[in-house]
Image 1 (cartoon, protein in one colour):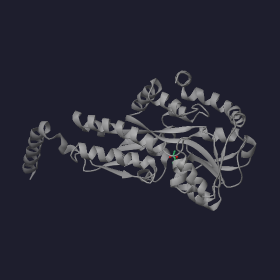
Image 2 (cartoon, rainbow, N blue to C red):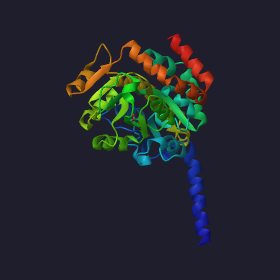
Image 3 (cartoon, rainbow, N blue to C red):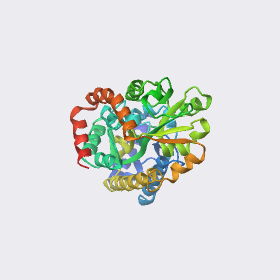
Image 4 (spheres, rainbow, N blue to C red):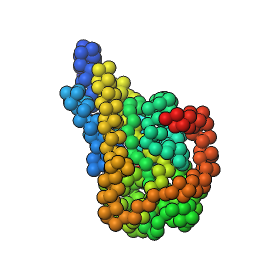
Length: 341
Ligand code: X2X
């Protein structure tokens, strides 16, 4: 019996040696699990779908990506997504910088209040030196970053009244995402922020457990937040969260050079296409999404420069405090690149 086991093992090893050079694809998984917070009704999910399709097609099905929206691989807890990618519970992801900020502190950069005044500023960061530095930080944290996408400028909504000044935020119970920076920002504005996953946010808004939330208009519209009493929406562009296309390190290393190139190029192309989708309908040239939101009875408020300045001033101490956490040098570089955009 023992000899037979030994012979069997030997035969297997010889067979494996023979295969190693020729059929590395035999080590590929039958399915690669891609994590994301929202599904294909949202530009975010569409970006992941575009990536998965391009990769499947160009690798002739060698790399078969399946989407897991709702961060279901980590039971809906989006702040655990990055750790799960690093550990291999998740093979790939299209994730928000906000959700990964608890693990990669530098990603809080994009959540510094009023750092990025317009899309050109976001582009200057993600496509410039800052983007490169952040990708190195993610790599150091054990995950392979490939390309940038975008969730979008996060606008504030609530069920109670119009917000035009920090005073209007006093006492409002607001759902915020998982980086403590958000607690600081909304506390500085006099609101009453509470940290909650996206999965928990929607029922909390529906029952009135919280009064408001902040999210990009594409999320607001596709999640139909007007149906959960969000009748007041202020456009204040205070932060925006980019998305990042990533792969678990071991998975990345298991692929051939040729397949890695395909996956990387597909991610870069999908990112460009996804950013176009994310910005659709929310610009002065094409306000169609905004109009659709107004059509649901939502009062949309824009701020005058003076009103805007009051929010910048009230959140300045938060910016200064978190600048140290993000890294002074990185924030200085970001501000320089934005000034020169
Ligand atoms: O939870 C949110 O607010 C969302 C969907 O925007 C993110 O995942 C950052």
